[in-house]
Image (tube, rainbow, N blue to C red):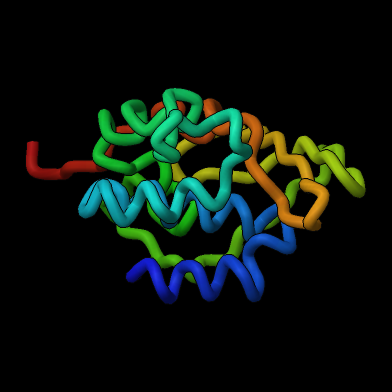
Length: 153
């Protein structure tokens, strides 16, 4: 996905909901793996200012190095990727907020399911003064997923 299409989706839809903000962050991470400059521009939209470096790029709180360590499989696992399908993802894959989530008007701790983990993943978000959801804790999204199933042994 190119940045223009991404930013249009962000402005029109994704920034207005918790799941939209999470989807945008994950897509940005996946795009970052192929094109760090373009992916960084995407990720920046989803994070609060204090998570950014002085040059405006995502800082270490974005946990990009962790996503890179597994080839993006952690990010892909929330968008339809599983060990069985070699973590092939679909940017339109449905995501769901699980029942044990704590949702609020301005701040939420929600749980979503990964296709590569047994346990749901918590994500902390806050809505800024402009009504835009931002991710405040992405570390759980970056934790490891199961290895790709390989029947060639």
